[in-house]
Structure formats: C-alpha cells, structure tokens
Image 1: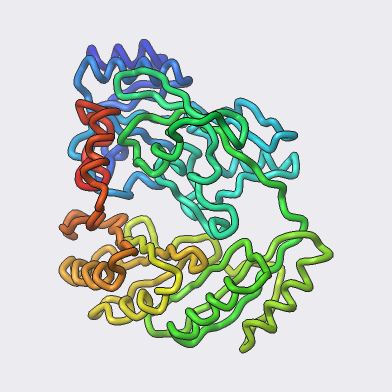
Image 2 (image 1 turned 45 degrees about the horizontal axis):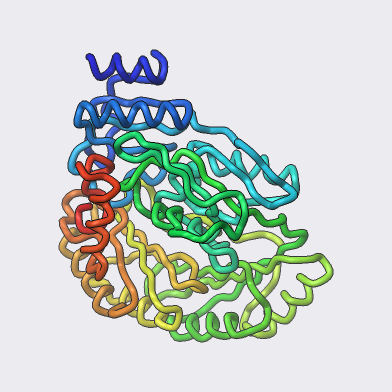
Amino acid sequence: MAVLAGLAAICGAGNAREAGPHDAVAGVTPKYVAAPGCTEEVAAVLRLAADQALTVVPRGTGTKLAWGAPPRSVDLVLDTTRLARVVEHAAGDLVVVVEAGTRLDTLQETLAAHGQRLALDPPSGGTVGGTVAANAAGPLRLLYGTARDLLIGVTVVRADGVVARAGGKVVKNVAGYDLGKLFTGSYGTLGVITQAVFRLHPLPAARAYVTRTVADAAEASRLVQAVLRSQLVPAALELDLPRPGGPATLVVLLEGAPAGVPARAETLVALLGGDARAGEEAPPWWGRHPFGPDDITLKIAYPIADLEAVMTALAGAGGLEPTLRGSVGTGVLHAGLPGDADPAAVARLLGTLRQALRPWGSAILLQAPPAVAVDRWGDVPALALMRRVKTQFDPAHRLSPGRFVGGI
C-alpha cells in the first residue's frame, strides 16, 4: 500500500490504482498502474520505482503492447494517456512538439486544420510515444520514411528519473549523437518517452491509387522493380496477398498537385499493363495489418529485390497459409497466421524465412502465444553492443525487462 500511496501522491488519487487482469502485458499481470500527467510526474514515478526496485512497462493505448517478447516481470504499468497535449505547432516551420500519449489520429486532425500532416500512418494507430517506441510505420514509409526519419527531437525520462532532452525544433540540429534515433524502436527498454518533436509535410492536394492484379511472385517482383525504377515518385507501394500462391493485388499511391497526378496515374497504368486501373479511393485493406489482435504475427524485412524469394518461402509454409501485406517498395511485409496454428509449423516457417533472407533480411515473430517457443528476434550481430547500451541507460534492467532483442 505504501507504493500505491506514493504513486497517488505524485499523480493524483484518481490516477494510481492496483492493476487488474486487463492490465496484463503479453500475459504478465502488473501490480500497479500509474498515469502521470506531465514529464515531471513521470520522473517522480520512475524515481519511486527505482527506490522500490519496481520493474516498469510504459503503455499508451496498448495497440502494440503484445509486440515483442513477454516481459520477465512487470510491477508497474506507466500509463501515458494523460500526456496528451500538442505543446507547440509551428506551422510556418513545419514542426510540431507533442506529448507522447497523444493519439495519432487526434494529432493528425489538429495538423490537418492547418493543411499539414505527420507523414506516419501505422495501421495499428495508437499514440505518438508507442509509434516511436515500436518504430511503427505504414504505407507512406516509402516516400517519407518511418518515425526514425521524421523525429527531430525527443524528451525522455531515464530509469533513475532523470529527464533528458535531445535534438530540437529545427530539421538540422546541432552536431552530436542522435539519441532520438536510439530511442526509436527501443520498445521502452531505455527510457520513457514523454515528448517528441516531428518535422511535418503539407497535405497533398490530389491523390490517385493505381491498382493491378498480379498472378505470382515473379510478376509481383517485376512490377515492383518497374515502378521503383520509373520517374513517377510514388508515395506508397503496397501488396496484399490473402493466400500464398494465389493472386495478389499491387496498389501504388501517387500524391501531388491536381494538375500532375492524373497524368502520372495514366503513365503508371500504361507501365503496369494488365488490368491496371486508377481511382481516387484506397482499397478496403489499405493501411491495415493482415492480422487480428489474437493472431500470430511476423514482420519480414528484406532487400527489395528479394520479394520473389520471400513470397516463395511463404508459399511453401508446410500447411500454414499466412496472409501477407505490406510495403513492397521498402522491403517490409507483415504476415498473419491464426493464433491456434501449430507452434512447430510456425517455428519451421520462421526458420525457412530466416534462411532464405540471409545475410541481409530478417524475420521477427512480432506477436505469438507462449506455445510458440522460439527466438522471436533471430540473430542480431550488434547484440553485444546493444546490451552495453541497455546497461548504460538502465543499469538495473527495470524498464520493459526481456521484451527486446536477446532478452534485453
């Protein structure tokens, strides 16, 4: 009770409570939940956690909480949803400063009123902090990159409660190590992100989606290469494959001025041939993951030219029929399998993929029930260095313990 009283004293009586089963992180139930309302309160909560030797997992809306390995332990869930303010929107500078618990859709609505957007469209939605922590991205990653590319400043709280700031509010910041990039994709293992500074882009005045059915892996690979080698500068290039070995759908998004987009779409239709056609509406699956919350999920990263090898490996999945979808223009795909799929078959599929993708690609088991007992991340050459970085930022290993690569 002393811990709960301490959390309530920091966050307010209504913002600290004992945890329940619905607060579990990948099946691990915490003892407490605290929702601080500002960076200073986050720092105070982490100091209390350090004094009490509590393990801590940050949580926003929870859309990506099942990603990564289950934590070894969770004493305290640090809820960031009260950190939900747009601190500053410098529209003239195309920069926004926003708190980590802000929902992405809320932020986009705010920016759209000024004709701007954060060019991040992860299918999982969620909060700004969760998007950065998981380095999540969607179709627009082809033209604009991921959170790692759009983040120019960050405020974090270390495991000992010390507040640290890196970067700033200009695209070219002062020289030094880019700590924002280090925290992006760290899965909450190095510190708690409380604020982020992003560069913005204008909303496009016109869009066109060019859709083309592809018969097999070889045709998909050929068409992707043709689009990428053209001068059409697509904003996104996505593939949807509901069934391995079956027909797939390739969709290219073009954005720009109303005077130019239709002509570019017409050129693209001619380039793709077949049943290619242009329209103003995205297909129903656009910007959505090919899996549900209880499905087994793989994230596959590969050299763009290896698309055919990836699709062929998945087609020979030994009785499994993963759905496949993602950004073939950047070499990032997600595959979904039923949650009750045979764990041994899933392990064999993962092994086959990793063998096919060596030495440059990777296949991560992003989400799975405990019965799928395999190394979720695969070989990571820089693991020894990552362990040293983790120890430097979090010597007691109390932040999201075990969730990341190599059990970090």
